[in-house]
Length: 423
Image (tube, rainbow, N blue to C red; front, side):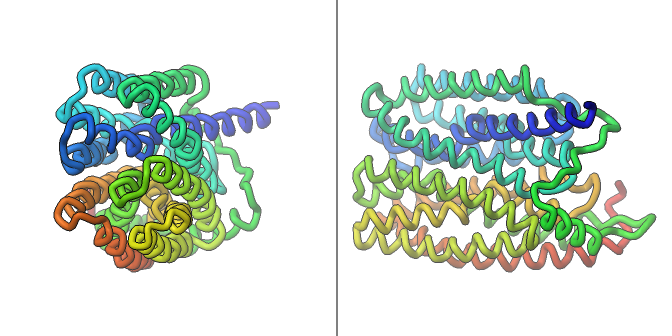
């Protein structure tokens, strides 16, 4: 009976992670992209001005990811409740007092808060409650961002057409707060101290493969891998590059509309990339459990190079069909902006260092996102087209694979060296 109760609580945490990702992650990032073009028209500003939202959001998230892990471990439920309320307040203020400055302010508030409700929280919760199949479970949780994007893209676009972006944004923020409040009050729980985690893996072969890799890289007794070493440096590079590619999720709507496609086509392209995000997060998590993080990230990047080229040719040919295909496949790659920190940290580090690594890797992903959005906009303002951006992401994907290989290769080597970080 006790085991069944603990198993039920474990899966309740997975449900909590899925709901939080579907609302607290999806609205500030991929779903907010639907509001960019209407805001540009409303404020009569440039795309670069409004897109600075993502710069401020991701810059604030860097700090939150780097230092928020301790807060989550100690006060998980209160942190989630407070952060979701702050995000909602920021968007309501933006809807009530619309201006470019308020867009930036809302981005700062959302950037501080959304990682502590989703991207940093999820790997911590899954690692606390489950021993095996962690990559798949993290992928399923983050995949709900894609579900939210597929479901909400056309709804938000229709809402903007009927009621305007201000009322639509306010309604979306209130729905998010309701969902997050229910989760924080009734579902989300940290694992009890001293309690064993749920041992049942989703796949026995996946669990065995994961255990074999952990054993191969396990540090010997009385030693611990160097935390701030080559592994950390390459993890940072891979995470930054993954974040740059992840910016495509928020920019696809603007890319489509500003490349000559009508808003309905752009909204469907956003739904396509959201569907790709759903498939990619689950598939790459499963592939990590079966074959390792390098195989998962390399597979995603390979599809990314093909899809970015497809989107570029779709813009040149004004082909909506090619745009849909490219966006759907691109989602499998650009989901690395979310799942790469969990995939990398779980395999590059051992023990308590994994929690630190999740926060740091997520922070570096947000550095990449903070750099990517303004660069995308500046390229468009300078060249009048997004083609340099889209085709330029192909070498970024290749460099991500190389950095991942170096990170994980260094992780196994450094586990045998004594720690020198003084901790």
